[in-house]
Amino acid sequence: MHNKETQIVETALGQWLRFPKGFRRSSCLVEVSSHISLNIDSKTGKVQVHKKDHDQVYQYLGEVFITAIHNQIHCSTLQAHISDRSESLFTAAHQVSMIDNAKSVEKGESA
Image (cartoon, rainbow, N blue to C red):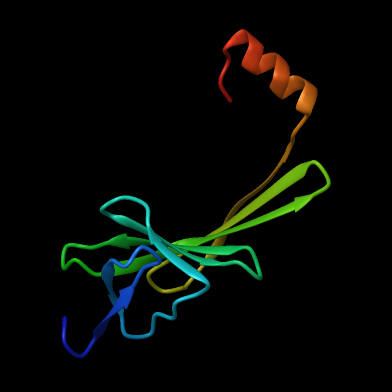
């Protein structure tokens, strides 16, 4: 499987990871752990998530879309399926308040 069906791609930190032949690197490719990689498109906010399989090839798991409007962070995800590439998992919005953050830090609370 390693020769014709896969390719090696360089990450932003100079590491080389193996992906399926159709993989296309975006703005920034990083390995988050020894089993997860993130392919980040800085123009669209799309983050592709890949996980290393038993053959040491990073397989597509899904995508995360991150946007911010004023003081709200919006996060949407798509999960890969075997027969269908993706399906919506959830959409969430989180409102950030600087005053609430400051109080949490003073009290030693975590998010």
